[in-house]
Length: 435
Image (cartoon, rainbow, N blue to C red; front, side, top):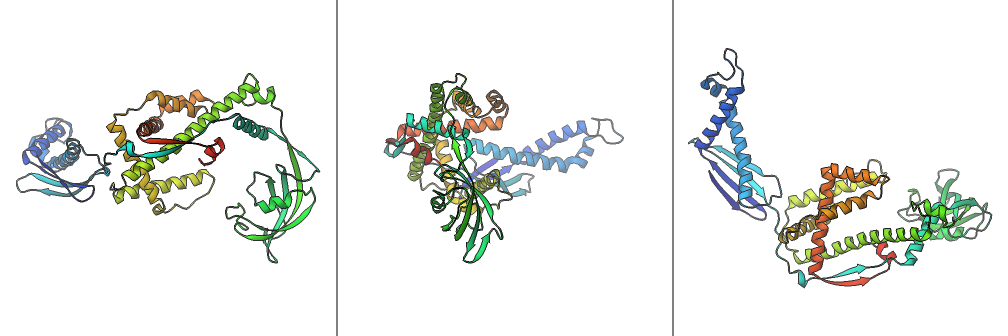
């Protein structure tokens, strides 16, 4: 069998193969012998059909099967023998039956881009670090209190943190644009709702039953589309006013959050542990993004085929649509994959960098870390042990965890090789910048 691989432009390779007639004849004979044991033809006992009848009826079909098998096995063997990493499914572009009974075919292969060797020691990156303080823990307890607070009617003046319900009408000049007639209700939690500052300022100091009018410009992202991005004359009446009463941090409060001892210090300890774990994940994600960008800059001339970019950008577009559906958007339009070309390139090069580092440094998946990751995920569910079992019974889910762990190990190795300058920031800033 004659096999040659021709290098063309970019990542394309042309595989030329000629299969000798003797090989084909031998394989066809084997195939026909197998068929002779299985086929049933009227007038002959099973396995006793004459060879010439088998050849006449099934010879052409057997040859096509043999040639199909030879094409597939030869391509795979050529890929293996030449240590090629294939980016796309091989495409057979030409087949020929030659005069001497031999057979030739040509296949187009696209290989994975090659990442050049990187001098990691010459790369410098900045790494943001932080720590969880007592202030951060207390702030989280305050949030937990707010989750459990009781809302009670009040006749006091409106202040920050109060829960307000208004009836309003928005006008553009003399024309009422929302609602079309009458008034609409809107609930507002002062200090947390995404309403304009001008409206909050107009509400502060009013009481239930008060009315007011104000020129207010609403942001583009406001959830009432009729007034989003517009400056309107906003007339409203306060129809309900509640003030929250925070619960005491006592034994009952602590136990509501799964701390059986009921002790405040144990709740604080658990909160601190959870915040540190979240912060660690954020630091890892930010460090990964920073160091991979630095390495991408060092290998910016690496060639990536248009097919790879198109496939990855389409996957990102589809992912964006799925996320929109998960957020409750019905029938979201499929985004144009062209809007995802740059992030697609980054993802491809990141994957190539991770793969090269893992291969060159012989980094193997640490299955202890895999289990730790699965357990960490399971802790967010009601029955953690069932979630762990589910992951270990689902090969695809477990493979995704293994890939993320291997990626983290490779990034950790890169960080150990580059020059890292740490920059300390507050916990709040660290977590806010991760959004």
